[in-house]
Length: 461
Image 1 (cartoon, helix red, strand yellow):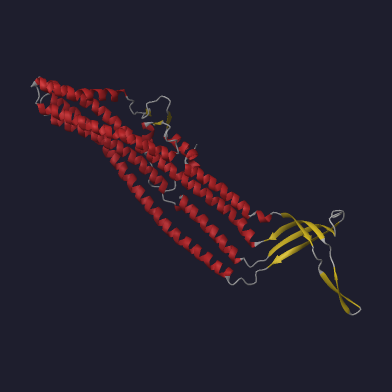
Image 2: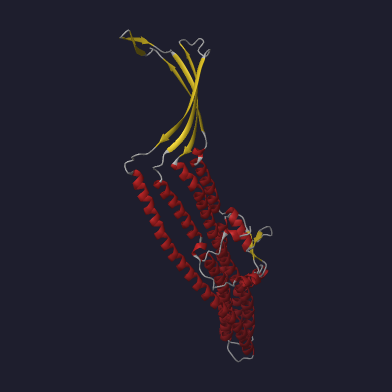
């Protein structure tokens, strides 16, 4: 019977021992680099460095920066009419038959051919807008369009900062779980060996050995699950950072600093104007009011000045065509007043005002959404903070209980099942504490985002 058990023990324990040896050789996650890449050349990033990298390389942010440049170019195009407009044109005319002109001679109407067969007139035209309602609108709207584009980019940056933080914390939670499972596996592996020797020596029943082996297998399964989950979480973090998928890096963090980062003053009052979405809406309303003002003043005249210089060449034959020029020039003012446009101006004005009313209702809806985001985030933060406090106490209690049960088991007072239960409770309490810690940090990010505290102005790249 002992030989059969010994063979079974070797078949089960040998792979376990090899795995435990491999695990113990891996780096643990303390205030050092949390490793997934077995390479010394992989870079390490703190959370701040991850955010800085994302703000420089994330595609949506860079597309927003390009969009800002496009908006500035569009504004330059729209306001270009304020600058002088200079054109050069040329017109060549060849008459196959000269036109007929009429004149009166001694009371009789007489016709005759008049004109020159070949005419070429290069013309230089310069015009300058003095006043144009459309150009006035473009001039006033340009800074608002620039502001809108900047706010879109800032909104993208805030979303990316939030996403990087939450992905980072999710990854660290899994890495901490791996750390707990590794330590638990080492302890359980020793328990398996001890209970086997006690069973062979007749000190304990076979069920103690079986229970120890089952618990070890369950922990190994949980460890493997956590290890497999790390890679997609790294991939998620790379995605929100804009990091090359094939490149590798490790995360670096300080648990002491993380503990201090938990604190947040929940007595702060929500201020809607701090939210980037609210700021963008206010800019949209200002822009729409500019549009209303434009249609209100669209009846104003368009005034511009012009100057033409023409250098005319005329000759009946091509020989000597450019031998003589007849230049002339003139200047003047142009005035255009829209008297009646089929009520288009009035309808455009009505439409612009209605669109402004829509923005007013959008503001009401946005405020309701912001308030909901704030109350939800605040409730989650307080709840997770309370859970963290309870979990911290549970870790201490579970460790104390485990030490007592271990001593009782060695004295033969309690069965080994109590040790397994105490060990499991200790591991679960540690996992719950780590989960609560990162839940608090993630919920704090959501709360800061909901209150508009996360801004690009507070970021130090």
